[in-house]
Length: 442
Image 1: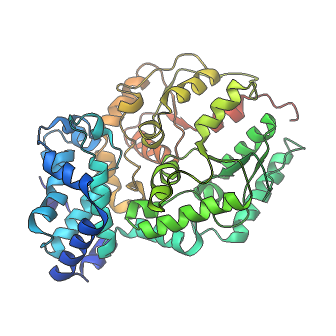
Image 2: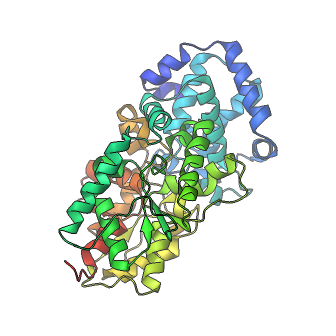
Image 3: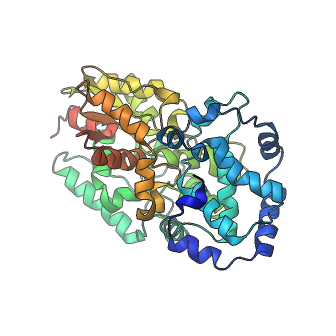
């Protein structure tokens, strides 16, 4: 079954294609291909052997084993392959199906790269397809609304400037009941650490800010958070294909840190945001490397443990399993540090999913797919039956807790666990560190 047989109605996609003409499509397709791509796309498009090995890599393909249109090669063939073959001469209906496929049936997890004998990066190709869709004005409504929020407020949740600082002051006040000496320092110049989060934290997961402050306080960290826009390190524009706005967001983030003259940025437990700051947005801006060093929370917690700055009053009861976030494992290589931190915190067995580490399956929420909203939720959950089987296999061995240091993984796995009635809990590392660490002031 091809994409034409499984179209889902989305107001953003429908409105976008209603404004297209074949002439506009051809012009924009060729402008992107000739002006923004080069040898990389040409090499991938001319060397793919259609061998089928990538079918083993993709969770969508493994969850629909009898439908080759879900394989990475099949997705490329149905989208970029057609654009290159026709020179962009396609009709608006084709663009609708292409956009649905690129935004909701590929998580850009890049697991397929590990299986391709010549290293074709389907994630890059699908990102280029999304870039074309953005330039055509054809994006799913929910994720486009989030991109509009980035444009208007520099954060993805329409959090106003005073709401941001109020949230920090509120969490500091709450935490001081437990830790009387705790502060969340705002705009402290020259601090060792600039701690940045994604906008869902002040919006509806404020406990994570509380926990981060408690950990920083217990570790004696020299840290700060900014009061001005730039604090949100998330980036749905990277996923819609709005690279101009992505660049503005990353510039603002780095300039906020530079203004405070901090030594480095520590990013909270999010995968896509780390990818945007560490590997994509900085490159779009033309920087050879980051103007301020960047590390993920997993790396920072690992450092604190190595330096003896986190002391435990108890251990978290196992067995547990670990979800490897694509963007910090395949994209940064933090699989071993993630496990070292987990072993430090957990009493009992770590029961690995199989496969695991850089070969673990994506949560099916990343790459902006979960942000495309309710119209595509059932398709997203059905597209990751293979992850449900992975989780169920650990549950059969007694696992009740899944540790994953990524917001999107939490969202995706929550939907899978709920749908399949697996009865498992999800934990961030900060949840466990806060729960188990010594709290001498408390």
